[in-house]
Length: 174
Image (cartoon, rainbow, N blue to C red; front, side, top):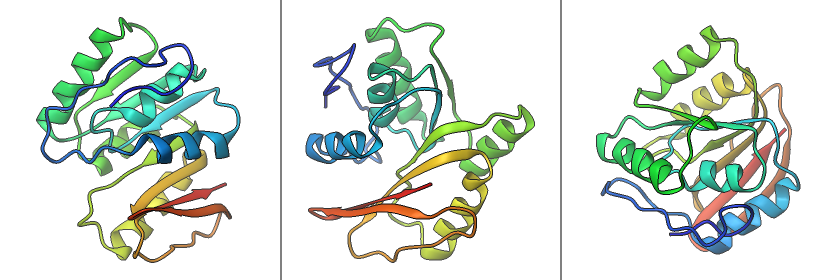
């Protein structure tokens, strides 16, 4: 895995976690092309290796919050941060996603973009609840799911893009 554009282009990212599912470069590039410009504060909630978040930093995000409850994913994030020589541009937490969202709400954070690539075992009900909660603290939500999964709507956001890439589906809410 590597960063595909921007300040850290071609820098490698590593993943120690067997639970992390890397996003193909083609999908990552398509997502960022759909988003046009990246600025402001970004959240990579189920970060894994941090592909989405580090790509956002490389392309101009002012700050990125990374979160993953998996200890090996957390270790990957710390190593990737170190390898990229990043210091004050990010914060990494190792919390359950619901606890992480409570933490961000308590800090009254509002995100320009939230990247969601939840585990495959998240069913439609769990995704709907997640989207409802994330929609309260974000302008744009990028959701990555299995291609065959349902499209979930939320009351305070519209679906502005929906595309399939191989076995994955990308849905962007705004």
